[in-house]
Image (cartoon, rainbow, N blue to C red; front, side, top):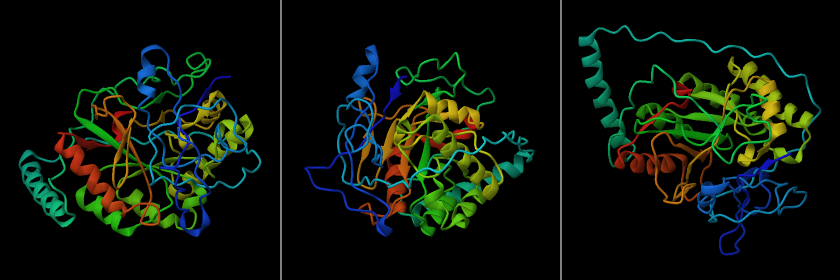
Amino acid sequence: MRLVVQNDKSHRNGAAVRRRRRGRPGRAGRAGQAGFRGGVAALAAAAIASACAPAGSPGAPGGTGPAHPTAAPTTSRQPLKAPPPATTQTPPTQTPPTQTRPSQTPPAQKYRSGKSALAARAAAARRWGLARIPLTPPPPPLTKPKITTREGFEVDGHEELGLPPVFTTVPTKQRVVFLTIDDGAEKDPAFLRMMNDLQVPYTAFLSDYLIKDDYGYFKRMQRDGVALNNHTLHHPYLPALSYRRQQYEICAMQDVIEERYGKRPLLFRPPYGNYNRDSLRAAKSCGVKYVPLWNEEVFVDHWDYREWDRSIRPGDIVLTHFRGRGDWKGTMPDMIRRFLNKVTAEGYAVARLEDYL
C-alpha cells in the first residue's frame, strides 16, 4: 500500500522548539516531503513543512515507512501530542448540505450597501493596521471547477475506489486564494473580532481534544459564517494506525462536529498532511467528499511554499494554525496582518473554499 507523507518536523540550527503551553506538545520531529513522479519531483524540493510534528512519523520513534528529504525548518512550528486512539465506532450517516438562495437585493440598495461595505472595510483595515484594504472576492462560480487529485498525491486504486480527491490548489483563473486554519489550540477573541470586522472568509479544520475545553469559541466562529471541518479527534499520525482506528479518528470527529455545530463536514484534512489509502477509505466511509491540503503556509514572521518558485498562484490553498505568543513571535492577528498584506499587495482576494467545491 502506498504511503503519502507530506512532511515531518525539524529544528532550526539544532535548537529545540519550545514546548506548547499546558503541556500539549512533545518534541519536534523531522520535516519531509512526499516524493513526486516525473516533473513533480522539482516541486518536492520546495515543499512546505506543516506546523505540527507527528509523533510516529518516519524518522521519529515508532514511525513507519522510509525517511524523506527535509524541507526548510522553522522555529515557529510546534508538535501536538495526541492521546492514543480509542476503539472504533460505527461510521455515521452522511447529512446532505443545505442550499442557499441568491441575493434579491435591488440594484440601488446594492450600490448603497456596496459603498457602506467598502467604507466599513476601509475603517476596519485602519483599525487592524493593514497596509491596504483587503480585496473583495468575486462572486462564487456558477459552475464549480472539477476537483481532481494532484499528481503524485494519489494512493493505489484512488480513482477505481472513488476516493476523495487530494488537492493543494483549486483550478480557477480568478485571482483568489483560500485561507484554512488547523487544529484549534489557540482561542484568541481578538482574532474573531478582526476577521468579523474585515469580513475575510476562512475555513477551520478542528481536532476535538484541542477544542473541547471551549466549544463555544468555535460556535461564535460558525455564527460568523465559518465552515468547521474535520481534522480528527486526537491529531494522530494516521498511516501508523490500522484502518479501523483511522476510521474511528475521522468518523467520530464527524459525530462531534454534527452534535456540537449541527452539520457533518464534507472536508477532511489529515494531520501533518500524511495519509495512506486506508485514510481516504475511512474518510469516504463517513461522508467526506474532499481532502484539501495546501500550497503555502503562513506564520507570523514568514511564509513557506510548496512550489519551487515560491510564488502564490490563483486558487492556492494557504495553511496556518491556531497559535499565539506561546508558539509564535506574535498573535493570530499579527499572522493575519502578514497574510493579508501580502496577498492584497499581489492582487489576490481571499475567497471561501466551500464556494468553489
